Image (cartoon, rainbow, N blue to C red; front, top):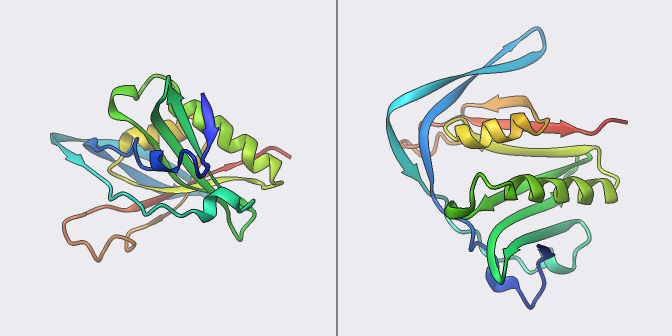
Length: 175
C-alpha cells in the first residue's frame, strides 16, 4: 500500500534507508550523442550506506514536493521522495527499499507512483542521480525506461575514499 507522507506518518521517513552491496561499477560511454554503458564486476564486494536525510516537513503541504511510503501491513518498507525541478522534470531525490524487501517489485510500484505524480504536475519526465558503483540501481533505472543524460566525475571529489562518478538518469515521457 502506498501512502503519502503526512504529519501522522512522518516518523516513517528514512525507515527503508538501508545499506547496499557494491559489487562493481558501470562504465558509461558517450558516442554519437548516445550514452551506453558496460559493467565492471569487482573481485571483492563491500557494503555502502547513505546518511539519513533530515525530515523536511515542507514535503507534506507543498504541492511541488512529495514523499510516498510503501507499507506492508503497518511496516514502512519503501519510500520515494520527489520535487519539481527548474527544467520541467520531476527530480527523484531518493528511492529506498528495505533490504529484506528488495527485488519484490516495490521499487517499481514506487516508481510508477512517481510517474503518476509527475504527470499530474504536468512535468515532462523524471530525472535522478546515482553513483556508478550502484549497479543494482543503474540496472533498475535502465530497465524502467531511463537513459543516461550525463556523468559527473567531480561531484564526489571532496570524498577521497568515494572513488565514484555521478550518473544522471532521465525518463522523458512520450508527448
